[in-house]
View 1 (cartoon, rainbow, N blue to C red):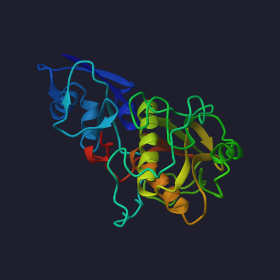
View 2: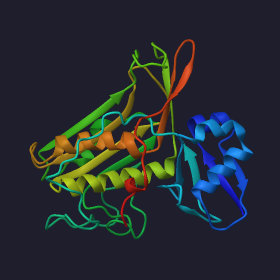
View 3: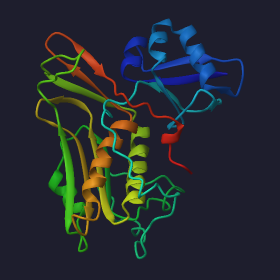
View 4: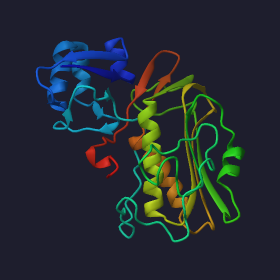
Length: 288
């Protein structure tokens, strides 16, 4: 069988293409055997495969994950970021899917709560076709952000507090291997998987902090100059003490762990793809 593989960031640069194809003798095969075939057919990729991540049908895969004809397969480096993961809250363990919703929090009626650039959940997932229990705003976009409009979307009669995090492009970076002065950042994403992971993060937040209501997660793409907005996370609730601070911190940290987005730091003398330290596994996929 022949499998098409999507490549991103450093893998794409090494291959000189965003897609490759490999032939394998068996259907199904495994991710481990697939990587062996990639390394043999594309020697330029071999050094990067040791640290690369694999997704099968937009879910993080392990070496024994089966791969069959027609699967959507991608290989990419760890997400840019994730150096400071959110500390686990042992008093609020993740709840099984579908549990943890407070009484009187029905899904939004059809057509309500979704603005331009927002993501309805896939049919059959979460709370039904296009539903979420609260207003949400998920976006992977090249457009500038209208933060006031996002805040207005998350607001409502029961909302008394919105906590947000806004990330910007730094002009100076003091990390080994990166340009000391940044001219701009180039962002790219595995967009379809990124959208699904944003929805997953929102569900994780609601499981940990059931009194958090609206959630916004935004990632900018393309070329962004120093001082421009890169990421935005916001959480709404009735009061400041219902978990909105903690949920917003969790949201940005989790985004930088599992949402497949990469940035290239461009300086005067060199450019470098930034890879994170966190390596997602199958345990980072949402339990169905």
